[in-house]
Length: 60
Image 1 (spheres, helix red, strand yellow):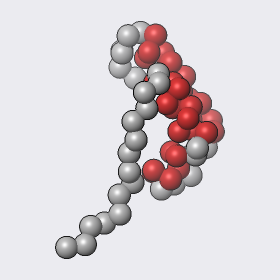
Image 2 (tube, rainbow, N blue to C red):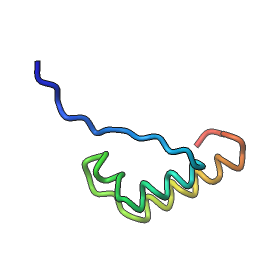
Image 3 (cartoon, rainbow, N blue to C red):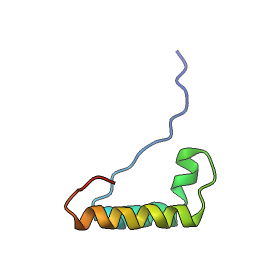
Image 4 (cartoon, helix red, strand yellow):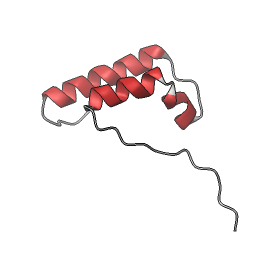
């Protein structure tokens, strides 16, 4: 049986924002989502993650 190619996953031991920044630096979001992801959208997501982290895990 042939298995379709996966998108892969990796775990990061650093903080959520550090992991996000590393994925952003490596341009991993576009590859994982198989589309172009503009920097402004990534900055918006990062700001929301920062707010969630400061609020102790509140909803996005």
